[in-house]
Length: 130
Image (cartoon, rainbow, N blue to C red; front, side):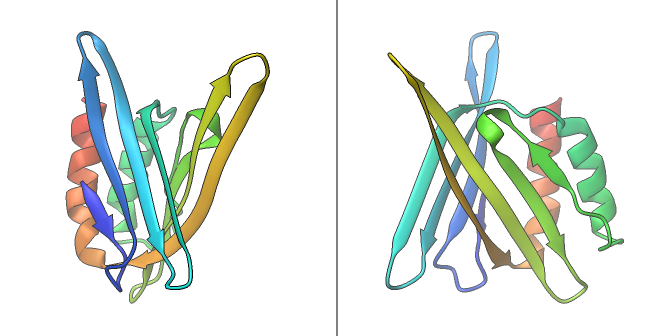
């Protein structure tokens, strides 16, 4: 599932990756701010609180005081916040290279999204959970 920014120049995509009995999540983000562009992708992400996140995200539809945050490996996260009229997605996509010395990489950011993406996003996250 791809979640677009309100200006349709930036997006965050989440999809399950199945390899036999092993399940991971691919998370990718593309940010275009006009005078710069940033992207990150981790094809082997694991989330630590998926059940709690999906429940909080469900409740966020009617109670915007809730701050659903999905925590993942390599300090990654996806967080939803907002009000009745504006919804934002905040994220950190992380990964690490464990060669002779471990190097960790993270891209942090946020953008406003159309509220129409919330219900499909909840559905995708619930399907990953099950």
